[in-house]
Image (cartoon, rainbow, N blue to C red; front, side):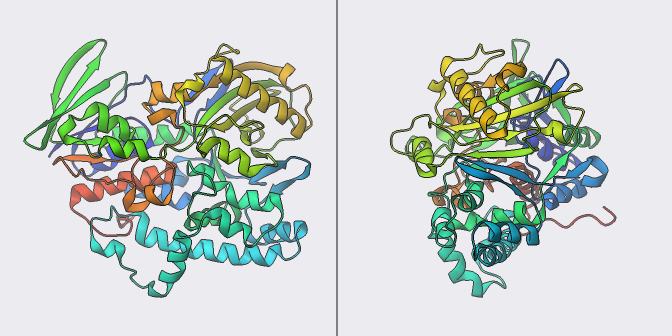
Length: 515
């Protein structure tokens, strides 16, 4: 039995700890915060409970597969609710649209907005579903250490199409088939979930449209903290020890091999020996703060060229009374879409004005997240990844720029949702800015999600599961492969398990009989 240290208590760390402990390893997980969850955290006050990070439950088969590897299922662990509508789209000077996660309803919606768009969407979704299947079978559940990951398998005829998708932007692909601004935005907005802009994300990622327009958007009743709690419990039941309020300062390496870590708790530092280390924290932090210079995975020049992805200002709002103009998920889009993304990702980054943003109101689905006759409202406003924008605070006491960004989004949402007195009805307010992501999560340049999924930062170019430089060192999480999002983080944990086993296959692990 090998001794394994897992650094970071987010979902990838918890899943890694659970899978490795269930596989017979002696696992200890270390989380610097007082609470587990990482980006998928929660905050509670005055009867409100907010998810502070991920809020879209997509790719349910990935969650279920990971649970089944641990001898259970998503249905047994979570109370999942299918959202209808999946989300609502607000656009400047245009009627709002409700998007439903059913193919025929999606086709009908597109056709009602733009003649011919229904047939175009059918082709788009067919391509998205084919691409998603190939990705799952060939590219997601592999660390690309086996040459078979680069071979087409039974998909030889798909190679020209896949090459075309890699050579075209998501924006270019969508704009070639759709004219209405709102329809274009619906199909391009998933790029933001990848930390990128539609103009720099490869068209390959149109596969995400099959998840929200066809497969369905779910919600775990009780919030995403229930997902974290489930994996934490499963890790403990498998024998893993989960340490909070414990910071890892260094990964110890001797002779090119992991020897342990240096941790501190209550101001007291100690060295602990381990045979293997799995770092699930931000890759830049692992590389530049936890590893000695000789063991770093990437040169400094890599970080100077890399795209950190989008930053974000978050606003958690407790609102008195109801907001009938909003549904669970809401997207508020500006008319000047290109200008919005240029402000965030262009050569002269700046806070976009006005800004497109996302508003989540889980209280429309879940009465446990807010007091009676109140709404739980969470805003995410994409901004450049720049800690200089500042950090947030409670009741307006954050950095002036962060509070100003939140105020503008609240004012715009009040107009779009038909609730002109929204600001006056806010009884609880907390903001978070890029400086908080940098400080609390060691997020490189205050990125909210992780490095953008550009062509140069996707698949085997994104990172590795097994260290190039050090025996016994492994990586998981949103900043390495396969990438951003809770499903990808779960897959990254499975890739760690496969690496420990020496399994270089390109697909998901088989589920144990009876699971």
